[in-house]
Length: 133
Image (cartoon, rainbow, N blue to C red; front, side, top):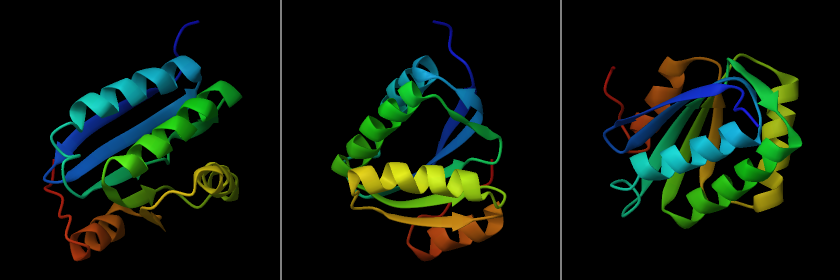
């Protein structure tokens, strides 16, 4: 099946910055997981953080959720310490993300933010500054 949805990944200091866009299917989730593991290889030897933009994410299929659950487990097992989730207020997104997190019991700390400046300030206060792109 053809991948639906897309993403952008970049690293800034010890923070992986991810932007999730569109409606995702399993194939997109698998590509994202593979690319995320590649780009984060130099980060995972010590604590690191993730800033994830979800404003343009349109949720995903059950198949993509299965991949996301595996990703969450991998992140927890590879020194991820902080996650800043950035998206406009959305009860549906918040419930969807929380449901996936509840299924995995990760060891990293998560915070939700409606704007990136607050998210970046929180990450910096936790020891994970982000350079402007």
